Image 1 (cartoon, rainbow, N blue to C red):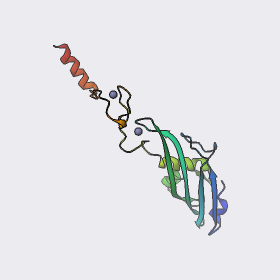
Image 2: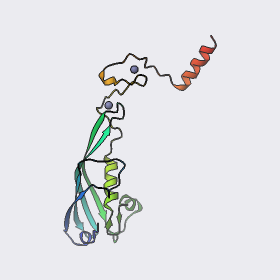
Image 3: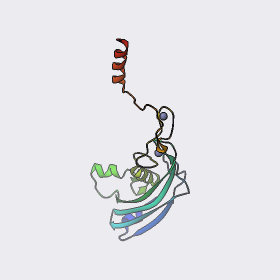
Image 4: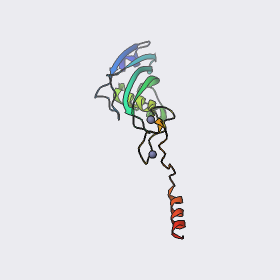
Length: 166
Ligand SMILES: [Zn+2]
Ligand SMILES: [Zn+2]
């Protein structure tokens, strides 16, 4: 997307809707053709305030018990964009790596935002108990009665020495 006009024209405001499709590269697949709205507002020459919002749903599965989970990201973000004629420190240049000259790479921008919102864990509920490593039972539906004692490796070695010396 070319932002020349928004960068140069004072007070200029442009709103666009970006449908998420195969042009946007991301590690996970969303559903229901989400749309992200982007609003560009010229703050002064060479400086744009970008606001973006949208909802994106991902059909995933719980990291612990594997049941299907729908993860909904409610995006609401802001970025400052600086044009090529504004002198910037290296950090700011790196931060807006999706902008080259007046050209904004929508795919890179949206990818960055999705990564920022991506949860560290996908869980069906905060305290999901997962499945038993021995019998595979869903422990959210009750205990399975397996011995859940899993010795760590160092301790297991000690147990071997102990057992062999008997
Ligand atoms: Zn779960
Ligand atoms: Zn079990």
